[in-house]
Length: 112
Length: 114
Image 1 (cartoon, chains in turn blue, orange):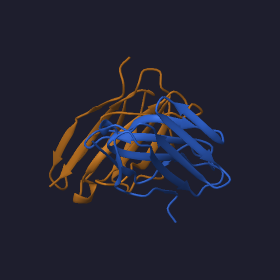
Image 2 (cartoon, helix red, strand yellow):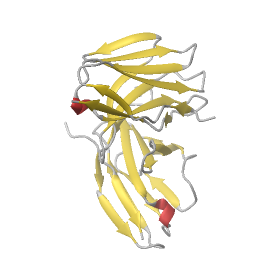
Image 3 (cartoon, rainbow over the protein chains, first blue to last red):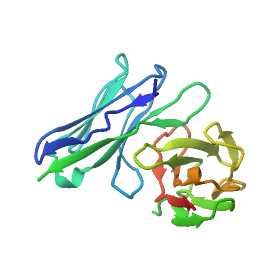
Image 4 (cartoon, chains in turn purple, orange):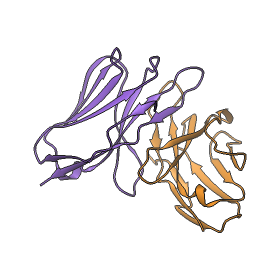
């Protein structure tokens, strides 16, 4: 079982809609969760970090964390064509190390 | 302020050559991480440093890979006797501390081994 799983997509949504991206993880002890956006040919860019159960909002982005169910999601409201990118979920691994494990990413296409 | 920088941005090597990839983290960032990213995949952890100490190198794929950060700032990832399967983008990231987990990535070095 992969430690961090994401649907590879592509996820297509019309402009102005809400895009919902999901991520599940296997390490119950994980405490830190991150969403990165990666445009083609570019490096990952941090969008959101979340550490506690519940929702965290930043502009058009909302991260949601449910540790009991071991999932974290990212909602993008009022999606724009410029949001078209791959979204990477990253989770820290516990047990004596501070490394992150990344999912394979979900490709999002926002259709104008 | 300046972000994470990496050099070279592109490197073409003949199979069997040694390469060295450099990472200059954000000033004051204690922690530095190296990742390998293959096309269509997420970044795969290679190793990380806290200051000059290499605390985890469990992701290095073979003993041909070696990383150092001798003065706790700039880091170099060295690959000896490169193979075609080493072709990938190598990403460096830094964070303020290990307990402040947000990592910020450099632009990456795209390595192509012929």
